[in-house]
Every structure is written in C-alpha cells, then in structure tokens.
Length: 385
Image (cartoon, rainbow, N blue to C red; front, top):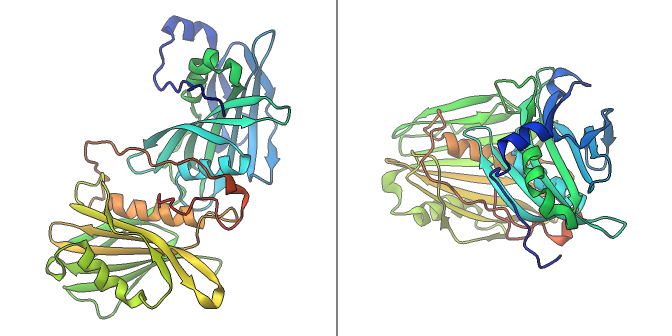
C-alpha cells in the first residue's frame, strides 16, 4: 500500500456543462425486467459485453462490462448481481464479496435507508497478477424481484490504474453515483415484513421478516413475558432471538436486566464483552445497551455467535439475545440474523421507521487478511451485528 492518501470525493465538482457533454446514458435491457438497469458512462467508455457471465466462486453474475477506448488511461466498469432469498444489508453483502475478491478497503461511505437497510460506497485497492495496483470504487443497490421471491443485490464497480486515479476520481464518482433499476419496484427488500404486536406494560410492536417464526411462552404476564423468534432453512435452525420483556421496576439499569436474563446460560462456556451504550436512530428507544461474544457447545466442538441488546423504553425493559452461526463464507445466516435484529430495533414501537435527526458514524472496518479462512472472515472484535 502506498503512503499517498487517495481522494474519496462524495460531491461532484465537475461543471454541469462538462457532465452533460461528456457522459451518455446506457440502458441495459438484455435480461428480464427485474435485472434491467441504466448507468451513466463517459463518452470514452463503450460496451464490451452484455451477455451474462456467471462466477460460481463469487456467486455473482456479471451483466454488463464496459471499457475505455482509444489512447486514454484505462477505465473499466462492471455491473453484477446476486439473487438473495432472505433480507440482508447490501453493505454486509458487498464487504463479504470484497473479502473473497481480495480487495483491500481504503475508504467507506455508509448510507442508511429509512427501512431498507444499510448501503455503502467503497474505495478499494488490489494488485493484479501483472503487478499493477488497481483502484476500484463500488456502490450497491437492492430491489425485490417481481418475477420470483427474494431480491437482487446489484453492484457497480469502476476500476482504473492507481497512477491514473487522481485524474479519474470525479469521473468514477459520477459513474457509481448515477445508476439505478429501469423497472424499480416499490419494495426494496427480499421479504415482506409482518408486525409483532403484544400488550405488555405498554403496547409493544415491531416488524419481523416473514421467514421468521415467533413462539409465545404460555406463562407470560404483565411483569415478565418471554418469546422465541426463530429462523429455519430446510428444517435447520439458522438463528434464534430470545426475547424477554420486563417491567421498568425489574432493574435499575441494563446490567440488572442482563444478570437476570443471562443467568440461565451462565453454565455454558462463553465469552462476552462488557455492556456498552449505543446510539439508536429510533426515537422510541430511550436507551440501548449491547454486548457481543460467543456461546460454546462442547458436544459440537463449536461456538455460536452471540449478541445481546437491551432496550429501555419509557415504561419497560426489553432483552434481545441473538444466537446463530458466526460470520463465514459458506452462507449468509449471520448477515440475515444481523439484519433481522436491525429491523426489530428500527421499528420497535415505531412501525413508521421514524428516525432521530442525527447521523451515526460508519462502523466499517478493514477486512482481515485471513478472509480466505472458511470459519470466519471477520476479526474477533468485529461488532457490527
């Protein structure tokens, strides 16, 4: 990695007249309607291929490839996608793909949709087999597939030689910031959401993706109630969220609630960070505390990912305990569990997904060098679930 700090512009400063006269709108229509898109390209960049190319290792299909022509510095644009069955963040999807590709993340801009998840704009570096350092800029989109269940996550990638990047920085911004689906649906998620509603010390409500099941404890009361939210794929449990509701008098703070709820698991071998406060965009959440760790199963010689969220509202305490697979390259269950918990928190007593007027800084970290290991592609202290 060179010591030079690379530009990462997020606002366009090229003159409007220049942009109008030096870019053209490319409409990709060589696939079914849910896969059709448009993208702005420089006049010097032309279509190379619009026949689908499948990459089984990356689980991606390249739809369009475009490249510079003539005696100018090299510039390449690609658009590829993957169909997903369950709701996840496009940000988590892309970071995982970059780990497999061997890209090194240089800079990140995070964009949070009101209800559709987290998106990212990422600048990367990668050394090609020829020895040249290449700089790429990636952005992602997501839309439900009108022809089949689930959704499609799309990515645009614009690449140039590092020695030419300063010249191309604003050109690349124009490309990755100006593209979209031609037939965009009204629902940018892989699943429909259904509302959980329960009368406790207050009327509690939040959304859960439709592929999850909720079980109620028969002994629930107005001072303590317990639920199990579970995700099964082909009869196999891929994630559970244990939920406990307590009235406000149960504890003075989140530590009291944690001790009461987690005591039933204290005999299990586990690692867990200290409870820490986190900001929440949900105006109905007065306080949010989290802890992250693992829960070990001796018989299976394995450890599950564990994350605890403790929510305080005006009149109650709400304990959420997420248990599931650790981050890995074999499946997206960790990403599914993470996204589901985010939906619960964002919609907690807030089915309109209203947000506070402040910005949470991105928590993206550089993908570790051990990304090729199948057991986990994240660092041990990766706390983004």
